[in-house]
Image (cartoon, rainbow, N blue to C red; front, side, top):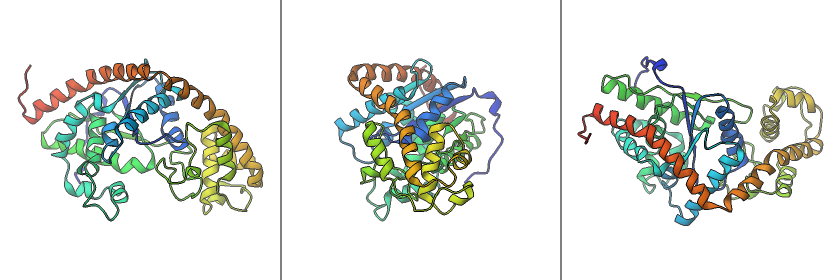
Length: 346
């Protein structure tokens, strides 16, 4: 990949972009790893742009009606979690054509070797790489377009998306070098918090996923209070009590996962949680975690249910967000076309 060059970051307005794929119900992992942090960033005085990435969703086949439903449900989750559509820009990706247009230009900047090294593609394609869509292979290039169409300077990401963001940086650098411009910012990842990567409740070595066959592996944002408490009680653990220091959780993935979830929900460090519950059995810790989880998540579920009763209002919010996003992206895309050498009407 290209060697990093100095890009004058100070010339770019601080701007955060991030998105969530509407290809399944959102989970506790999405809330702690993304939504909760999105709300915190909204309150820091930086311009925030948040997107339901439906173009990414169709890299694997989606039932059309279900995709529409899940996009609205994702928007409802953003709002219920605390995103204010007046303070942040909230929209679905396909309504802003700059994403697809810039994505194609980046397909011509990115190298096949870069794409083939993406571990997420290897994981999703498995042994059937010849049969997956071209879109799935080019997914990281479109992700770069999502970010750079707004000259975003920061992206809140989980650990699993860090490689894609590094590729975004490489695409920006190569574009700048190829055309001898300092046009795209070299975006910075924002990886922080106790539970940036929430793991399965059934297997602490695997990420909590909305696509896991077992519903017991995750807490859905649509789960009611009883279901949340039940899943926490049944979460896999080990027979040992909680240790006195965080180091004691090193080889205990399920225990570490529950401690991290508690810490993220409570706004504590994992070290503080371990110190508070040192020596406690999971028969004591799990009810406390269940109580905390219900307290934090039930209001979000209730508000999501209320919002979903008015899909037209959700569509209106997404449409207004798309207009605001388009107003930022189109001038940037126009400059890209000028730099590349494309003729366009003025």
